[in-house]
Length: 328
Ligand SMILES: Cc1cc2nc3c(=O)[nH]c(=O)nc-3n(C[C@H](O)[C@H](O)[C@H](O)COP(=O)(O)OP(=O)(O)OC[C@H]3O[C@@H](n4cnc5c(N)ncnc54)[C@H](O)[C@@H]3O)c2cc1C
Image (cartoon, rainbow, N blue to C red; front, side, top):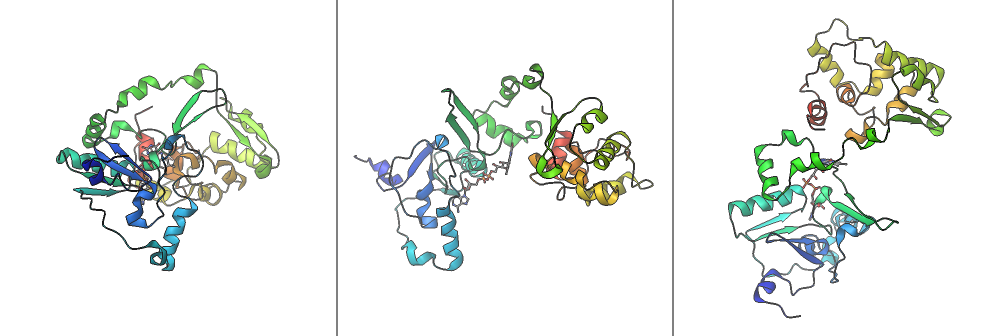
């Protein structure tokens, strides 16, 4: 292969894993970060990363690099850094949304600037990477590798909206293209599955208007069922007499699990019952999530406390977003 002067200036004649160009900014994946982290170079044509499956990026080989730094053995095998002769106006380490945005904004301010974005994984996007695979029926499925969607675009700042417009992301299209009535149109509802491992028997209870009816179908103990029904149908206010501000302060410091058992004196089975309710959004179970945050993902028990609809500074930012998020 013959290399042009420009190619050589970019280092295209050297053995690197891959070098992608995003509107003029070079993005190097995997071993291309060699001068920074000292990994072995492999010089093959890389397959298209989103179509790869399995653990990518944070592999044993990646951990071994950091372990050798920890153990003080890194420079025993890393070899001496060599000058590549490349010159950049900006080098960004990390090709996630933050790094790509930094590179984009820099070039916006200085058109024609030479920007190098380094990433230790094989694709750009960081946690917001995309996956795709061909299903058994031959259909191509494209999905998210990490982040699922744009979080509350109505709250985006003008600066964020400007970047999205610059790179051609049509946020409004999401509202049009995502079939928000998909489940409803098919008569699908929600329910809860209590497992044999946690509750002694497998049971599926589909939610309905009558709480007593669906609670009876769970495999909770009779005491836990009665406590759960009371939590929905006859909530109390354990902070009666306190101001709303004092209640918010108390609830911000109180994990939902402790609220159920210590504050309300309910059956401990309910901690296991609700443990998965906070995980999808907050990434943690009810022993680690405060009552204020648990409340916004519909954990019950707060209806008698006169808390109002306002968000509160002691809620987590994610809790405030979901409580007030205007986007469907
Ligand atoms: C489970 C989960 C779900 C989420 N869901 C959503 C959602 O639905 N909507 C939403 O808006 N947000 C969501 N977020 C948040 C969103 O994913 C992140 O805020 C965003 O992707 C972070 O981008 P970043 O560029 O700051 O970091 P990252 O995406 O983590 O990018 C950092 C990049 O730097 C690389 N890197 C690190 N160290 C080095 C090094 N030494 N050399 C070279 N490269 C390096 C990493 O490999 C990575 O590619 C979610 C987050 C999580 C954890």
